[in-house]
Length: 123
Image (cartoon, rainbow, N blue to C red; front, side, top):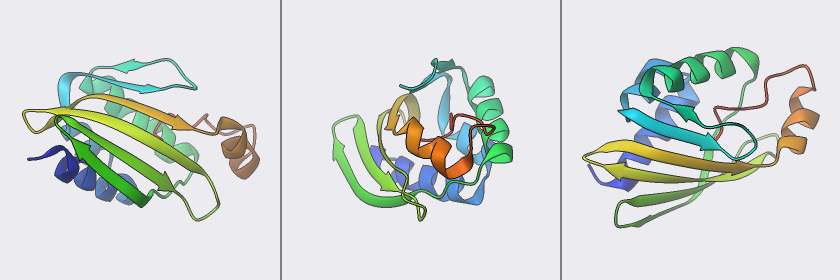
């Protein structure tokens, strides 16, 4: 699969809150780095991150732009409450090897409250 196709599957699984389906899109030793937080390494840890975050806050990923260049897909997204961000996905052999996400942590906390998780599952 092309990087763009993998990220479209990622968006679908994210919006279903399906941590298992999301984890299956990553290489065994993948890294997910949301720049507001520490990197998460390995498929099992990435799955646990999504499970934890889906239990803490509801975020919907609405695709605004999705670009592809070589092994990379770049996603610009928003959710209905006004949170915005972007994600960079390096896809090799049809799986995500590396993901880096940028989003506004302050906006997340304003929308979901300071007692909520910091939004690790965001792109």
